Length: 187
Ligand code: FNR
Image 1: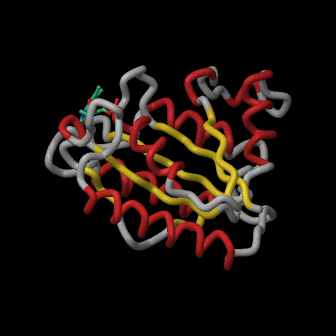
Image 2: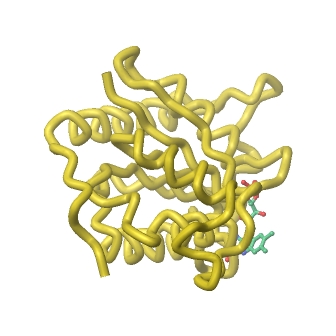
């Protein structure tokens, strides 16, 4: 059994990213447990408050310590990742790195044409310093999310669902071949 944390970059109620995340979780095999992490409750990172942190940060850091992998579904905000997601990454990186050695699948999305390409790669840049191991391929950029769903919040295109299943399969495979190493990435 492996456990993954699901991060949704958007905080809004009707978020397409959230709908995509729910579809992705439904495609996971039964030996993977998924827990949605709420980045919206995390006060802004301030180094002055560490090493003891604040209760919300500490709860989040403890949650990260239980995870084998991360599923991150995020829109692009101004060609980068949303602030709430970056705040969560910063909090989880201190006072020691709580992300080290975790496997991650990145899914970026947009109502526009480019599928959140900029956000996807900014996130991968942060992964390097945190020693998060990304699923390299398939790369998942989902465009035109505003026309992607039916009235039951299901993805209409069978081709898209098949593609997402292939991304989940690659994620699960990497989760099982990668041994956890949390002692790296300190600075
Ligand atoms: C956006 N959006 C956007 N889209 C894009 O393709 N590239 C971008 O750089 C941006 N920038 C951006 C900034 C901000 C502050 C907002 C609110 C939106 C549009 C974005 O793709 C769209 O709002 C998505 O629907 C947001 O994702 P959720 O909330 O549906 O998950």
